[in-house]
Amino acid sequence: MNGLKLNLGCGERKLPGYINVDKFGSPDIKHNLESFPWPWKKNSVSEIQLIHVLEHLGKDIEIYFGIFKEMYRICNNGANIRIVVPHFRHQFFYDDPTHVRVVTPFGLRLFSKKLNKFWIENGSSNSTLGIYLDIDFELKEIILKASEDWYRLHPDKNVDINLLQQESNIYNNLIEQYDMMLEVVKE
Image (tube, rainbow, N blue to C red; front, side, top):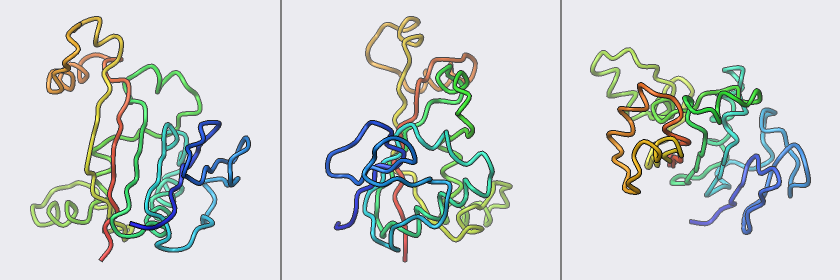
């Protein structure tokens, strides 16, 4: 797949082979990701990295939606968007006053038209944001990173993901971050 590769909100973590973008520091391109439109053409991007960025953006819901609409506009069909964010029940999330948005796998699934249509057909009350915003993303991968607290409780290096998820519903600080991959779906 041809197209640009963007490292959005790069800070000082520049990735080789990517256009590194941030509103601060010395990126390849200085741009505020909460300002629209973004400076890339429709269907010109094949990959986006948002590594510890999305939780800092979109305090206002319309801005958050605008970010997803812009990603959809600039990405081509099949483009991958990697989103890494702190888990919302970990100190890394709630100790940082610049974190304004919880980002979860289920929250990203709300942008799937396929799921939206399924929910409508089955009378579910889930928000059908993919249809509402006319965008379409499929969540293809979720990697949970267990925290040091988890390993203190469960020293085995082989993480039982089901147990990790169950216990993280009861206790804070067990999952450090989500690493998720979205795929852009265009007809």
